[in-house]
Length: 148
Image 1: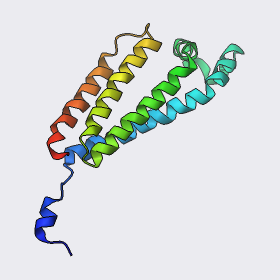
Image 2: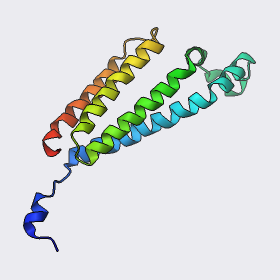
Image 3: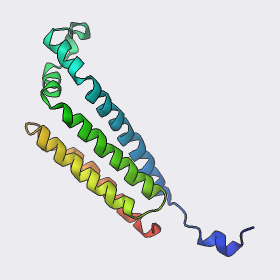
């Protein structure tokens, strides 16, 4: 049986941290899955494109996006998937109130921006992605005092 003193010393997870972690699990989880699927199927997509088999998509097909997608190295998708997995791991550690998770998450977010710039240098500067990352990192930093 636990005493009230033991119950009071149990760290509690702040609501902000819960929300941030859940958003990270969902967002990074979906990105992990989609990049893994692209890694596994990019050669198939390239084959369809080269054979002109995208006609079934109709007039709404954005050929520029597909050409950009098939022009990138296959390794881009596995790097992205791996870094999203690291991001999820960092959020998992923070969920469990481990401060090291914040540092892992932060490095993963910076790495994601660098990877996109290395593999896709012709894309516009990723200002939106940087802003979202900064917001998450800033809010996660506010919860560091609850972690050990």
